[in-house]
Image 1 (cartoon, rainbow, N blue to C red):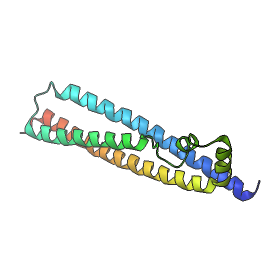
Image 2 (image 1 turned 180 degrees about the vertical axis):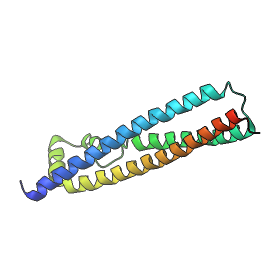
Image 3 (image 1 turned 135 degrees about the vertical axis):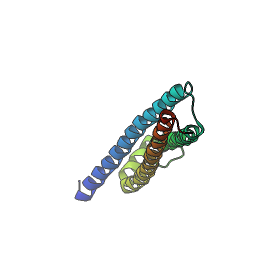
Image 4 (image 1 turned 180 degrees about the horizontal axis):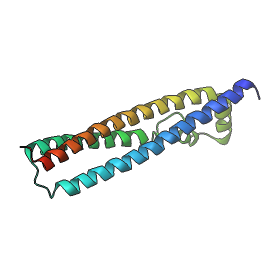
Length: 148
């Protein structure tokens, strides 16, 4: 096995590991966002909220819902993709062997583009979650302080 082949195999494994890590982070953040949404709803429905708190809290909740949408988009299966299981399901065993042996560099490139797209969605979702959380904290402070 040549050095190039070993490097391609290592790059392929690295990209797949990055995708798995991103999916794990996405799942954890999605669970957190869901818990914050549920907790906020539970607490806020029993409080007498003023207009400023309703506006800040509503914007915060909207941002959290948008973050959840991005997270779901990030982990949505791409059944029309050119890589992995969807492709292999359409090939014979001989075609799978030929595709894996001959096109590892293209697979690394395709998976890398997929990983970058997942990273972008995750980063945007984290930004939205932080902003939404800040707005919910502001709404809580406005409610506790009794601002009108």
